[in-house]
Each structure stands twice: as C-alpha cells, then as structure tokens.
Amino acid sequence: NAGVTQTPKFRVLKTGQSMTLLCAQDMNHEYMYWYRQDPGMGLRLIHYSVGEGTTAKGEVPDGYNVSRLKKQNFLLGLESAAPSQTSVYFCASSYKIQGNTEAFFGQGTRLTVV
Amino acid sequence: AQSVTQLDSHVSVSEGTPVLLRCNYSSSYSPSLFWYVQHPNKGLQLLLKYTSAATLVKGINGFEAEFKKSETSFHLTKPSAHMSDAAEYFCVVSPLGGSASKIIFGSGTRLSIRP
Image 1 (cartoon, each protein chain N blue to C red):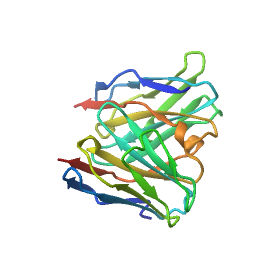
Image 2 (cartoon, one colour):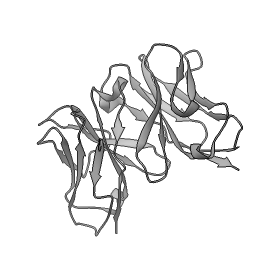
Image 3 (cartoon, one colour):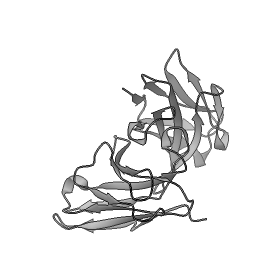
Image 4 (cartoon, rainbow over the protein chains, first blue to last red):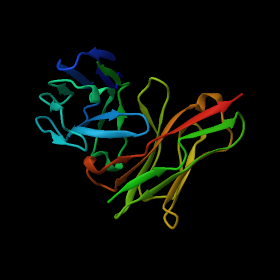
C-alpha cells in the first residue's frame, strides 16, 4: 500500500513562476488536506476537501488554489510564486473528518522560491 | 476558540531515561487530542489519540499520554528513551467530531537522545 504520495519531493521556483503539487491516496479516503510547515509554527491548513468535486479554505489559503476532480487526487496550485511561499508542504487524507480520526500524511514537498 | 501550546521547543534526554513532552490546550468544547511524530524528512505519523474514552491513552513504540481536564494538559511520556525516538513531536487539538478547519497543530517539540 502506497498510502499518500506527493509529487514532486523537492522544487525550486523563481518568483512569479507557477507550479502544481500533486497528492494521491490509495485508501479511498473522502477527506484530503494541504498543510504548510514553517519553522516554529507547526502545520497550518491551506485548503481541504470533504469529497470529490469539493474544496474549502483553511487558515492560510491566500496565494494557493486547489482542485479535487478525482477522489484519489488533490492538487495544490501556486499561480505566481512568492518567496513567502518557501515552505514544506504536506498532504494528508482521512476516512472521516479529521477532528476525531487519524490522518495519514505524505512525505512532504520542500519548495524554495527564489 | 482553540489553541495548543507545546511548552518546550527542544528536549534532550539520555538513552534509557524517561521522556516527558508537555502539551497544554485550550478549547471551548470537548476536544480530541493527538500526538504525531515526524522523523527527519518524513511525513507525520500518528502516535496516539484521545477522543473522550479512557483518559490514559497508550500509543505506539511505548509512548502514552494522559488527558487531564482540570489541568488542560495532554503530556506525552515514555519510560525509557531509545535512540530511534529522536524526532519532532506535534500535539494537535480539534473539536470532537468537528471540522478540519478547526484543527490546531502545536509548534512542535524536537526530541534529542544522547547516547
């Protein structure tokens, strides 16, 4: 079982460039999430999805867009990258809403914007 | 409103000695509480969770945590540290049965193990 797979694992972007991070899960989970992790700040929720075709904003959604066209995939897009978006991005999925059930995390994508 | 405070950003212990990672929370409704571990360059893995059942929760790798409502704490302990326990640990609070948007991660505690 692959679990949650993130692509790519590392990326360097120039300011203003765009990119898409892909998250794929093979556990048939309804709920998927994108977080960013910055030093000393824990994980902060960017966007999440409660099912195929749905998305919702989290704590820090500005500068990001997401799509959930297929149940197993959750895409995170940066339309015009900024240095403030340098971070480690984690995707997660869960069977139920994360509040009282375990979330499974990908290994992360380290993004540097120069 | 919810918040979670991990009281130590870094804890260092000797191998074979007890581990204590402290977490205090604030929640206006009954919380679920989790501890996750993150090894270097890896994703987060669930250690244990409290969801209003037994207040003493046992997790993987010998870790356990006790929910103390009167102290609003959920400290993580292990009787004897192993070198493989060196990692970052996150305390997480969310409303029981609540929304993903209300989940709060602590800022993390880095655990170092001295030989």
